[in-house]
Amino acid sequence: VRDSITATDNTYNPSQWYCWLRGCVFPTPVKMDNFMIGKKSPSGIAASRAVLVDADPYLTPAEFRLNQNFPNPFNPTTIIAYELPGESRVSLKIYNLLGQVVQALSDGIETAGYKTREWDASRFASGIYFYRLEAASTTEPGKTFIQVRRLLLVR
View 1 (cartoon, one colour):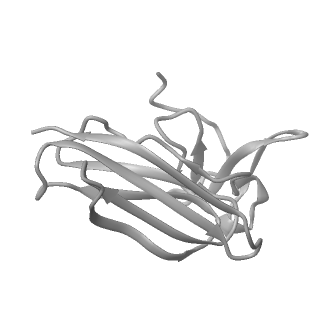
View 2 (view 1 turned 45 degrees about the vertical axis):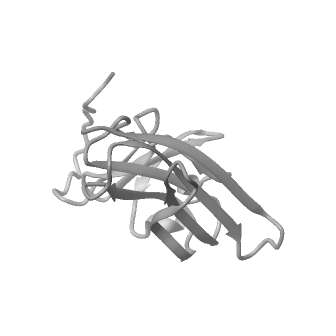
């Protein structure tokens, strides 16, 4: 597993770089400076100075996705990452084994992009929990996504 990237740029300007890391535990932008390395385009890897991250089409997911939380098992916090291809009404909730909602991490309209939420389970008992993402496009009626994944809290 690579944990570092080396790049040379004669116009390097500290604290203004971003690097998009795919193939990591979950896809998330890593702030390095003001530079974006995006998904592969027909002409190769998209790399450009980033003024508005959301304006780069190579950084908008092509489809809905709910990734496995990391770390898993965890104690007491974990990160849940998901992807939205367009503006969506999002509900991300944590459930216990009885199917009861124990915490809502997101509930509302969100813009397109790669999203992460942290769940701090320090006040919950050890055990198996589930997280459920429900996302409905606000621009394409009828386009919805629902997925559930399991996570394990250990003490």
